Length: 294
Length: 281
Image (cartoon, rainbow over all chains, first blue to last red; front, side, top):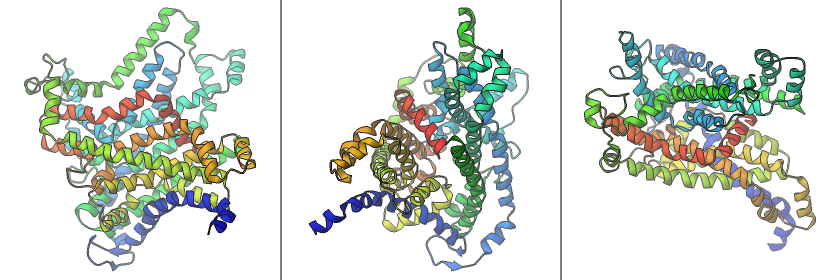
């Protein structure tokens, strides 16, 4: 045995080092994800027997009005989240100055990023509170009454997504600041020699160099909007009357509360299929960028 | 870009003042919650939600959180879940990153792609089987369910991170070690481990924040107060203490404290880690 080990350790040690992480990840993450696709073809309450139903869950989903509510809300999330990259860029440009005191201000902008979504939910619940919230305070100044956003079918999703925007803007800001740090000094200098200042410098010299980081910010934001779950669960639990559910939340509700694991798995699979399109687009963009850099 | 550095001092001060105002607005909601956490009950009843508190009840409110709610228990649970998970992720990803960057073999790129791709999966796609697995293993509703899951999931992102970091280390070090007849394990111990400290620091703060703030898996894999982490605990508290906004606010600040403190202590690591994570994956 020792001889066998000595002869083979040059490849066996690496294999043994790789295995714990690889096995755990494959088993818990990858295998589980594939299993969900299979479960979506079953009728299953989570405990009892599993019955094969083929595509019945998907057929039901296609006729489920709640599914279209979730889908529509996911699109609303996506549209609202698209504000994050431009606002993040604007904030990044504002704080990207070599002045004393700017560093601490910069850090303060990042704070929402490290808060738990539950915390963000509480904080914005406070803003939206219909009797004493900040919003009511502002409406009150003009003698009006703020709508109870979170209990209004027409506003709930907008209110929740806007709250979710807060940390997302901070995330985009971090990305753009990294991009601004990597600007090509020569190009800036050349721009200055050519008399570009202020707005023109920004438009013609700085922004073109941020296109790659901008792409990343947009992609990460799209994926973030599609993944949204926590804020909905914390702020509205999908209500009122299921008007603010998103796919991720509907899936959770069908599985955990209604014990319809097969149906939940079908929703998860659809969500995943939608995301794959964006993930593939994102990875393709990254690979392209890497090639052009090399 | 306005070049402030060449302008007069006054202009600079005005600029900083303006940005300070924007930050104040940006953090206003959080600041209000902080203020409310030291407000008295009477003031809340009287509707003083946003004004300056007339009487500070810092001690009373936070004592109430510790004594009348299970927050301290939840906080401890979060530590019991987060700390072992972070350590597990650091160990596993150092190993996987080392092998995937320094011992290329047929299929190693595919394995790497699996780690990276798995990282993007939405949590819901694996929810049912993971929950089922934990039930069958008898881990459901214990901290181990969350520890095992978080280690497995974060290993995807962390492998990407460590592999890129180790691949960027100077190759001569590895060649020299190999020329001296060092075994892979010795290379790991004497070359890699001393050099990856900065990467481990960045990874530790990032995964700490991710795991501490997790809400989804907390509600999917745990049920009882004895194992629930702070995020799920806080949300329950909101149901039980609906009108006691000062208590809820104090609990909220308590939940937010560890990641915010860690962020300010290790800001550079956090930002560099997050940027690299997003750019490379």
